[in-house]
Image (tube, rainbow, N blue to C red; front, side, top):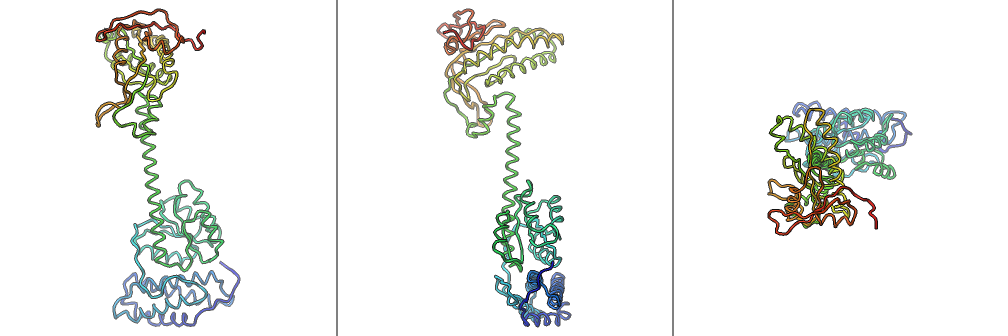
Length: 484
């Protein structure tokens, strides 16, 4: 990186501190741990690079010197943290003077007190991606964060950063702004525009202390902005917060996916038996799964195959199942098409209702039209039976309108959406009296239709368990617009 050379007031104290550390390094190195020896090498390398920039006749720009100074300070602070005992006291004193000198050199504003031991912030280990075009900066951040328990990968430019994001589930991105080629702003924009990365926290670390630049980054989606040289404690805190945000997002995403899978399962499983309204009600109102119910006026539909018991005696079980599944499949499609709720299948019998869980003004109308459509569909069902050498089926359909309890019925371990009440018994008795191919409706249903049904005949039946005679009507058609 190049820039206009500007005077950078540098303290002689810093240069003397560097020379002091360099002079005692050979003797102190043998007493250091392997990690500390690597930090010492980092201090000496960073010091050499800084001295070289200062001695460059062309001069170094302010951003470059901040990078050099930040690397020197970072390695010195990490090494100072590891200096222990009287044997290393001289090195510790030299490092303290070096760290203090980095705080007073130039026009760099630092926000921690030199010489203080770092505060350790407990953080869940995370996968950190550090993006910086300067090798010493990448190595410094990687070494520091690795010692904090994080797994760190580095990228030297924007292309490498995006490639890493493609391959790995990154928790936090530390992003330098000034890089050759794809700069940090473009990397930030691409991360936030990506459907799988947009929630990944991005912490911008830059030597540019430009307020408008900070505002632009935050508006572009950056989660935080730190200045170089970075404060280690502040960096720990920001990374901890970023990891926590990423973990919350991941948990929310997993929960959302679980809900989607549950919804798909519910729709796939219960959609075969219940109308879309009931399935949606279960999904949107979890309290709808509670036991109990409420009073609803519904039109009840019951049907069965006449002579089915005899057919079962005459046919092989596989033939019975084939024939029954074909019949029930066709009837189910018709009932659901008319927005009916299938309560249950009992062998060849079907119990359905219109008016719960969602009530409509035309519940009785739809029930009658559904019953007529079921009878009309028997020609197609029987044609398919005949093609396989199976006998024709004839069904009876009964309708009754009344007030029932509609809701979840059963126990806490096993329950079903169903209907309870005297009208259910009445419908069953009407169905017993219905002949093959007929649609027989109770007086209550025909009254609700207000003349929109074509009635061929009316009669009274006596049903066991019911004291009064039941008036029923043979329905043969439906008039959308009855004559006044």
